[in-house]
Length: 180
Image 1 (cartoon, helix red, strand yellow):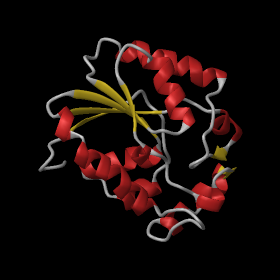
Image 2 (spheres, rainbow, N blue to C red):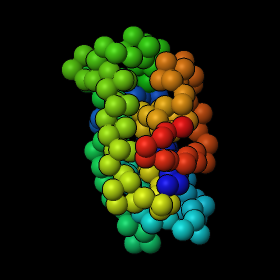
Image 3 (cartoon, one colour):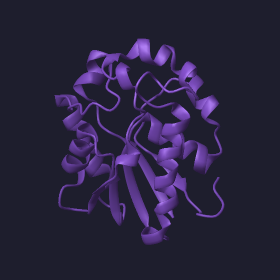
């Protein structure tokens, strides 16, 4: 199965330096332009479906990019890490200490390892209906790190140390019984 990952487009919170976490968020004007570009880039990709986090900024990205052209399926398991009481705090404060929350949950939230496990359960369910298909997933940093760990063999500890650099998509080949 071919899985393409795209992050949600740039949100107002991204531009303001806010770590949105499980708050809904909204795309900025530039983010809406990027969502249109995403739809153009992937229009001829032979996608069977688009899966999206159910958080508003991801849904908005999917709707602008693919509304009506490809089935869009929302799944809460594709959400960002839940920063709990830290949702909506300055991004630098949240990300500077993210290593502290590898296994320990954010106050009132979840740990990075729990977020990755949640996304991995989505991957475990995907082949039941979409085996041998090409699907696109719109999510967040936690989604990408889960995909990197499950399908590319990159340890979560390694991902936590790296700064997230946006790019136009990541491609993964997913074999249900053998990941990597």
